[in-house]
Length: 378
Image 1 (cartoon, rainbow, N blue to C red):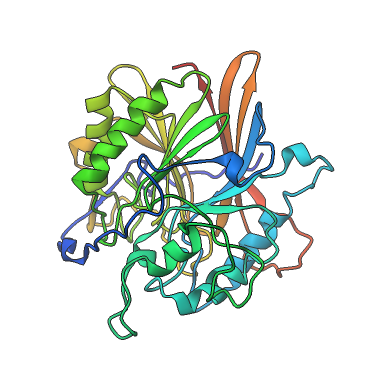
Image 2: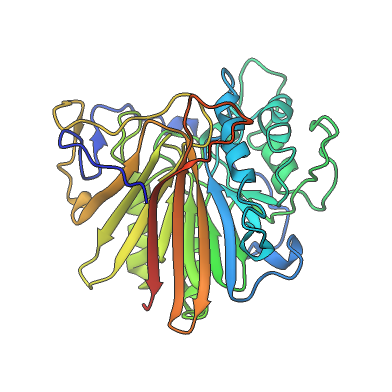
């Protein structure tokens, strides 16, 4: 297996970007939910005969691109290689979970055909999503529309149908019940959060209470089901563009402490690279925080160097959080497997990076850049 080495000059912990202005004024009101509280959707609604003992799915974030869509197309082409690659449909991904920023820069309906429907035209599985900050933005220079109008038409429709601005694409709208919602599967409860438009995210009190209830409900299904949390804004990061989101760390960690429930893994996007962080809690629990935001936007975000005085890791919130591995110079995607075995449940992930010099129809496969396995014995 190909392993990335962590340079001696790179941070090995989360970092905070100094002197960041407060842009909380960018917060956008949330749309009316398409479904009923508590906003659950079963995998059985979109996948025929969901697997009971092994579930495989792709995960990727920040795929949209205004300037150069070639990287997005390369990532999709490599994901397509995972379907029936070994002649076994059991190992095919059953769906793709998008971690947000489907469309840049302002979530406009006019950009969805070019940035989403055309690139994913041949992707054979359903695609579900949480919204990113760019999906939630509103372009002040365009015809008036509300935040997330296009996103909800594509992903949170009341029934599945052709999307009017898809260019007649065969991919129908998805019927997720809300912009924050839970995907129920036979092997995992996947809680998807909405962190809005500001650079470091905002979560309303209403969503906070919903999240606490979802954690408690998901915990009752253990050990038969894993607990996964997805949020667009990365809580912990060592990159030079965003750095860690203190508001999202405080939000998540408060919910974990208040409920006494921690997820098995937290996935996020927003940062345009791959990072695998591990947090060691005082009670002995360990939780992985995975960033997978290198899905296609042409600008990647390098991990910060220790001598870069724009950043610091001097923050008590970063205590016992370590950067285990990263890929910050190539785009890529995750393949996640959740399996029930005689020895219990496990979540395994593989991050594949794409060589940037290849053509879309190249025979060269993506490179396995990192892998991890979590044995669910909590």
